[in-house]
Image (cartoon, rainbow, N blue to C red; front, side):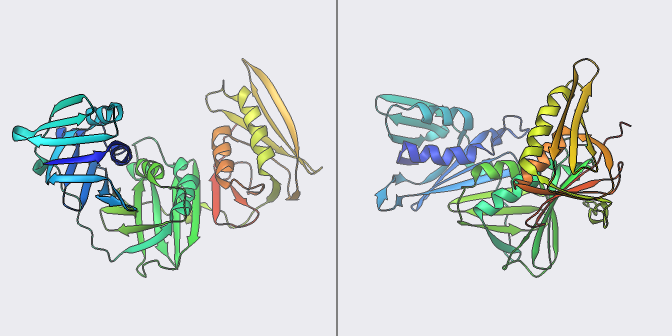
Amino acid sequence: MKFDILRDRLLEGLNDVMKAVSSKTTIPILTGIKIDVTTEGIRLTGSDADITIQTFIPVEEDGQQIIHITETGSIVVQARMFNEIVRKLPTNEVEIQVTAGFQTHIRSGKSEFHLIGSDATEYPLLPELTEDQKFTIPADLLKSIIRETVFAVATSESRPVLTGVNWQIKNEALICVATDSHRLARRKVQLENLPEVEHSVVIPGKSLNELNKVLEDSTNLVQIVITNQQVLFKTGEVLFFSRLLEGNYPDTTRLIPEEYQTNLTINGKSLLQAIDRASLVARGDRNNVVRFEIFDNQSVEVSSNSPEIGKVQEEIPVESLEGENLKISFSAKYMMEALKAIDGQEVVIQFTGAMRPFILRSVHDDAILQLILPVRTY
């Protein structure tokens, strides 16, 4: 196999597939990147068995010749080393040639590297997906769905299914839910081209975080194909495969209260900043707990104290308040992440009592819902 390629275009492709390569893999060949050269162009594949990313570089793009192919073929090269070499080559023209015994020669300017490659037939094949369960979604919307939910997945492996985000397709809506059993983030979006069959899958949070890095912030459509064990996201020339988590995701609908004792509308930005300030003192405390008290006079007090550090209190005006007075305590970290996910100016907070979960949502719509369990301090 032998070809010449523009270095910056090769680096772009490597940047995508390197996101799937892990040094911790137990399968030695997966520490490598697979390079497939055909007459149409070059396919690069990286994988850690959970996530697989493949990108295609065509021979020509926008009338510009990117690759000259002399001889087709396939090779697997050590990912980190190959990436570092390409990054540091002296010129933008790179020649790559594979000779007998998987010897891989990389030439650029006066520089020449010789790497020992591996047999590409030993590299795992991509999963075959039937495209009956597929739909499209704009890339920027998909990025915001990930941002508004993925932070709430569980980090401990004690219940593996909670380390993922539950994607449900029903009633012409996509509903994405993440919970670590102390809080919950839910995002609903109405889409026109959803499959008619109801579907529920759990996508690992780690996969969604990596996907977010690959996606461009544009209105270009991303095609999503779901099967029983895999999900595929197709965007431009990039294919992003992820395995799905096994197990039944808990029914979270019954966690969301039906009625509320106290409804509060408040400026989300000023509340976020006040909790951020209060958490400076709370940080010494292992739970990072902030207290929140609602008064008759249309204001709330955010406070925190730590026996070793001191205390802080701050009053914030509210836009509107209905219902009973309340004292409640919660994790500053959880509250700040929920407010950042809503990202709107006005936030509605609905309480059902000092020890019951409470809800945050935007004034403008209820597409985004955040639920937090309080902390017992009184």
